Length: 114
Length: 113
Image (tube, rainbow over all chains, first blue to last red; front, side, top):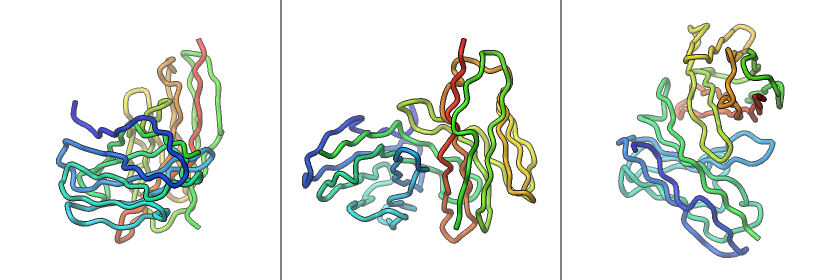
């Protein structure tokens, strides 16, 4: 099925460990982004990309890295996990990040840092 | 400060009944307003997108309204079904160089049999 695929669905990390959250889309969307969702808060943008080779920071980028080597993939790397990074992470894609185009979200990765 | 506020925080209704969810925003410059449905353990799914000039947009039993003058939107659900149980998130897109989304915290709806 066409859409945004995130892996893994669940992950437990120890403080200081690193890991990569995977995100892939098969809709040939140029725009991809990562959000985190925390209880009582709206989704917040971590990083985004407007095309292969182009990435930029969102509102909460500290502790995260991204790269975009292909149109399809947009992995999110946690460099040294901290308990404050316990959250649900969503990847989203769109034809472009502008105006009237809808966003397609993945089903999320629930991350716990202990 | 750009903010999107939703009410109520949670709501329980009987199957078959109608309900209306509210969204107030203080966002500038405004581009469009979106409503998303988020099932438990899933990502948000788009229901409607409305620009400044659109007052109403329907998607099946879901009807969204927008009053750009008062900066209010509502989502009306008709003849609710058990599958409507979810969180409903109001999102406003800013008309900036990068099209930033401002998310509300959502209304959690439970449809009871």
